[in-house]
Image 1 (tube, helix red, strand yellow):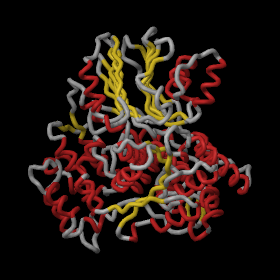
Image 2: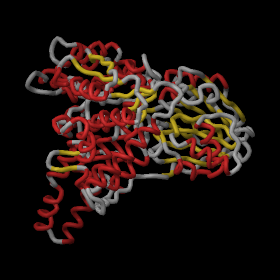
Image 3: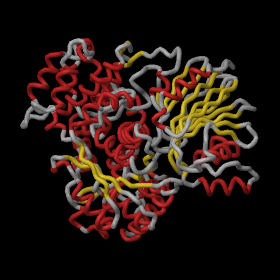
Length: 623
C-alpha cells in the first residue's frame, strides 16, 4: 500500500527532478517507509512506500530484471503467488518476493489483459522503455484511487489531489457543477472532480498508449454483471457464501507485518472477524470506535463479538475534539467530501495504526448483499411502476413517447428510474438547494452528473434491486465509501483491506437470487444467516445502525460544531457567500434545534466552507 504519482510526456522532454519530488512528497503520509523516483526521457515516476509485503525487496519505482519495464504500484495483489508460479512456468525471472514485480511481468506477458487476472486492489502505472508504451489501471471496484490530468503534451497522475496540485504549471479552475453535486450527494461523482483539469479514472478502467502521442480515452475492462441464479437451494447458497468469504479473508491476511481487524459491531465486520478467527490467523488486535452518546454507539455489540471470538478489542470514543483536526482532514480529501463517518473512520485508523499497519474491514457488504435501507425503500415502494401505469392510462402512445423524450432531455438523457433513485440518495433536497444558491446559480440544481448518466445507461432494467446495487457500485461505493476509507486510513499510513469486496466474493453476490439478499425483515439475508450461527438471532436482526457522528447534537447551541459553523459559514469573507444566499445559511442555523434537524445541510456547508478557505485562489465557473 503506497502513494504513487508521475508525469508521462508525449514530447520526449524530461520532467524536472525537483518537480517530481515535490509531487511525491505531497503524499508522503501514504508511505512513511520510503521514497523513490525514476526519471527518463518522457517518463517521471514517484513513489511513497508503506511496506507490507517483501519489506526489503519491494522498493519502488521498480524495474524488471532486464530494466526494460518500470512500475509504480499502489495496492495489494492477493493471488500474486499463483500468478508468479504461472509466469515462472512461462520463463519469467524474478528478483524479489513482491506482488509489484508480478504485476510488471504480468503486463509484459499478457498486456492489458493482465488486469483481468489480478485479484486485489490496485492503481498503477507501468512503462515499457523500449517500445515506449505505458498503461495506467485502477482495480475492478475502485478501492484504490487514481487521479489524472492531461494536456496535449503530457499525462500526469497521482493517488491524491495533493500530488497533482504540487505539479508546476498546472493552473486549476473550479467547476460549480461539482459543488452542486456535492450538496446533492455529499461527494463529487466521478469521473468529474471539483477541478475542470483533473479527472478520476473510474473503477474497472485503464488508459494505455504510446509515449509519442496522446492516448485514447479511458476504457472499461470490468463492470458488475447480475444473473439471479435460482438453481441452488438456500442451504447450498449458504455454504457457498461461507466458503467464498472464508477463502477471501484468508487471501486478505497475506502480509509480512501484523494484521488487525475493524469490528464495528455490525454484520459485515463481525463476519470478517469471525472468519479470521476460524482460520486461526489471529488477529492479534481488533479495533472499534464508539460515541459518548450510546444511541450512536455500537461498542456493546462489538464487545459481544470480541468476547465470543476470544480476541482483544481495543476501543476508542469519538469525542468533539476532532473539530480541531477537521480542517486538515478536509485538506487531505482534496475536494469537498461530506460523508460525516469520515470522522470516526479517521479516529479509528489513528487508533489502529498505533498497533498494526494493516486492518481488514467489512466495507461493501451492504452494496454486494443488499443491506442498505435505501434499497428497501426503492424496492418495497415501486413508485416508478405505479407512475408509469398512470401515465399509460392518461396518454396515447405518441403523447407518452413525446413526454418521455421531454423528460429525458430534462434529466440529461437519464431514465425516470434514475430520477427516482437520485431522490432516494439525495442528502440536501432540490428545494433547499435552490434556495441556498444565489439566483444566478440556481439552474445548477437541474444539472445532471455525467457519471450518474453513464451508470444509468448501463444499469440492468430487469430488477429494481439490481438497478440500485449497480448504481451504488458505479457511483456511491467508489465515490463515497471507498474514498472515505482510503483517505482516512492512509492519512495515518494504515492499509485497509476489504475482503467482502473481493472479486470472487462479488461474483457470488452478483449471482444471488433476491431471496438471499432481502426479505420482510430486511437486507443481507445470507450474511445474517451465516453470522447468526455464531452470534444468534437477536444480534443479526437488530435495527441497522450506521457509523455517523451525532451530527444533530454537535450543531446545537453551545457545542463546538455550531461555533465552527458560525465562524466558517457566516463569515462574509469566508467564500460561501459568493455562491450562496447568506440569509438562507442563517436560516439553517436559526431553525436547527432539538426538534428540527438542519444538520445535514449545515455539515456539508461547513466542509465546503473549510475547503473553499483552503482554495481561495481557484477561480470557479459553471459547466
